[in-house]
Image (cartoon, rainbow, N blue to C red; front, side):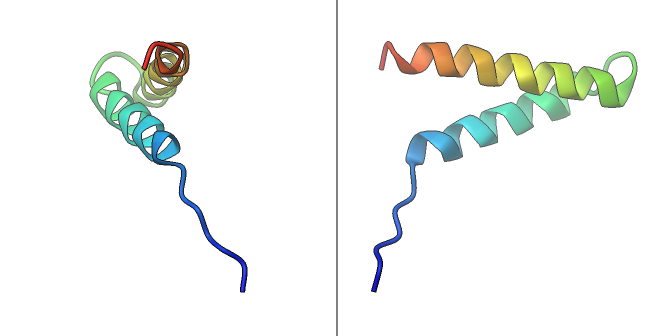
Length: 52
């Protein structure tokens, strides 16, 4: 039976990007600002991963 592994960093990145998207969607055009905020959070956390 194959082992199933869960990458914890992927879960953290997804949760943070989703939260940033929700918070960012409160300003301006909701869909665009939510997508931009989530993408920026994902990029920042991806770069920050190298420091942890």
